[in-house]
Amino acid sequence: MATGSEKDQLIAQIAQHIVSSPRLDADWKSVSLVFTFEKDGLSNFGYSYQNGGQNSWKAFSTMSDELDDDVIRLCSVMKDESKATWHQALFQLIRGGREMKFEFSYDNEMRWQITPYNLDQMVRGLQPH
Image 1 (cartoon, rainbow, N blue to C red):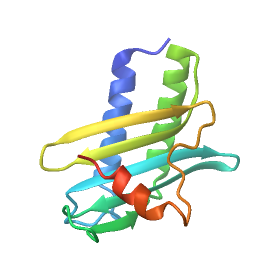
Image 2: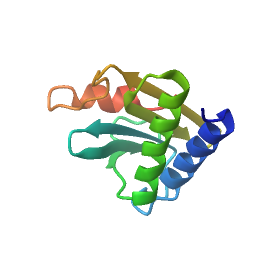
Image 3: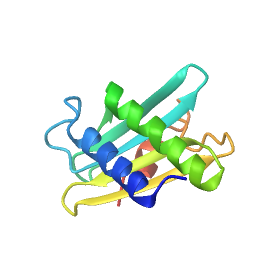
Image 4: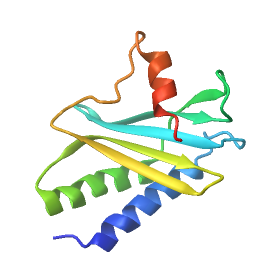
């Protein structure tokens, strides 16, 4: 069984990978990144937010093998602990308050799936507060 400290270390490493991504705008105030296990592997998407305005967000994703490896390892560690496998993970970071939030979706639920019909709602709903 994995130790809580291994899980905590992986979560901290994932956060560090996200904020150090060269694809993240330098002026970000908060960021949300969703990881999804799909049939062909792990994918991610998200948004960086500059402030509270209506159009103050930009689409954001990463292409880091190290980040993907840490997310896959975190899923494995958590499965060892709980015997349950999550299929999506949401990481939210707030720069000013140095806050980090994370949530997991189990049972193949596609909780944070973006479609053309829910794009505006999801962009607002994923913004960290």
